[in-house]
Length: 202
Image (cartoon, rainbow, N blue to C red; front, side, top):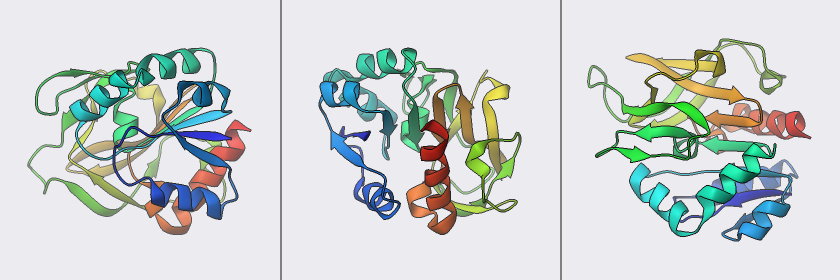
């Protein structure tokens, strides 16, 4: 059973719908005990970093997530969920993240239209079970104004997208995986990525 962390951060229905379609069992929860008992965690999210981390802190989730991940539980962060994994965000101020990964969340420069919204290709940087049955340079769906940067660990970069700058699209370090795009809104490619993720952690 996958625990999807419910911290009132955007539309989670489409994620649940995608997982149901793949016959992957999931539960939407605010309960730390449910998260502790789950086989893995998904941290979704759209919206502002500061509101999201404040909500997670208030619910006592930040510490639960840290402990579960340190104990080896697989976690997938989607969009804002992935950004929350990092040490610091510079979205409307400076905010401390969960700190599972080194690096910071920075605004996409205005040399391109912000937000980065719509379909874009991702390029592979290293082999991963996530790419099983995925074509070269597949299109996925992005909606974000901020991206991972700073001194993030380059060896965690599994794939990226080009949008004015190199946007880390999938990152992976041990049991921590992040996807900057929305796999649940990325058609067949997104469904395959979610299926591959589930098989990778099983």
